[in-house]
Image (cartoon, rainbow, N blue to C red; front, side, top):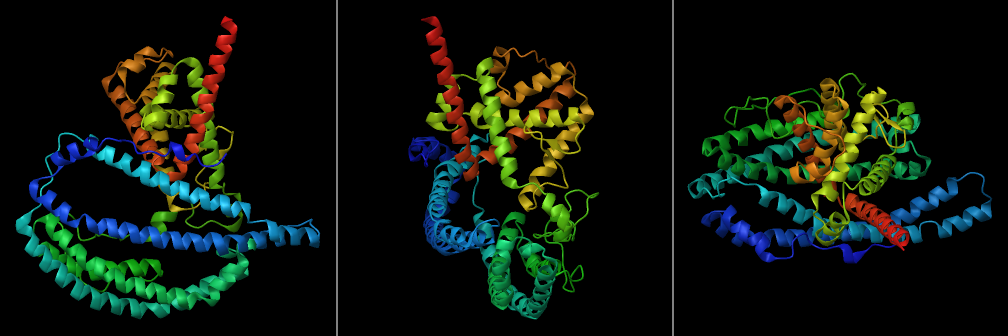
Length: 500
């Protein structure tokens, strides 16, 4: 089935829904500033959209067909005529389908993710109106001007000084990967592109130089933000001095050079030590690759081959959502009204957040009972810190889930408490719905224990809400909703035929 464009609609269709709340969120000076600056993000968004469209068009018009051609050539067990046919046919329909999918995901981001984030901001209560600190603006302008002047000079010099190091270290690492068949040379289909990367590495270094010099403007402008947040022009000027050290230390981490910086680094925020910075002081490689301190920072090629593919994990998650959703529908935990509400507004929390949270808590409890060191997925595949997919996203997602798992393991829940936690996760704390579904769950008698379970369910809801805002996640969850709705229709037809 192709993309269902009719399902793409904003979460709120009434303008009063947003602007009535926004008028209470900001003070008069902030409203005036937003009105004057509103054309800027619109212009930037237009430029980003056009440039992104051109880049994706180049990718799907040239890079994707070339990669599919290399895959067809590298396939074993095919005759030369068969390979020739596959070179001409592979990458045609999949290319068109992939381009349409990108357009669909972008539409989901524009019409769903944006409004979901805005709804989250509007739901926050008890906050004072945000007002512009008018008296602090002159100091911010001074800090920004001096910051740009100082940072453009010093950061440009640092970038030019470290460019030869980046050039030769990059070549050295690429040649090592070529000899050992690691990194970009791990897959046979990527070898021609990786070889092209070695040839074009000087161009990449030139691009890095330009990006480093342009980033100096951002570093300089950030001084105005520091001065505004700290309500002190002096703090903004101190950041101007510290920003050079921050950039120097950041580049040292990227190039595996010595830690620290030879430039001074004064304290520019109240109540924060001098080791705190806008960018991480700790080695980036240790921070991102060392999700667990007991695990090795670098994986061997055999470990990389054993790593699970990210699509396997996401497919297992959405299949579990479909399976558990049908089970909950049969048990009466969710109703046809919930499905209709999600289809009309796409913001029903029981379907949008509750069902995924139910799947996650089921996976965590199943993993604890099985004694797994990681997570036992619904298809009986075990996900651990050693075979999880590489990448920052999975590093960031795996760690909080592991923490929640250890918290639940230490609580040693009884069966009634586990069933109560299922209801908490599904209904987002809605007491009326929790009482209506009698699954045998009962809240703990201890208030502290009950608060711990509620805290875990809230963290899971926030976790699932973030996942629901991902464009790819939304596209797949629409299919899950369709499958659950079809199950509902089948049940209705079977009940109708039984009554006749």
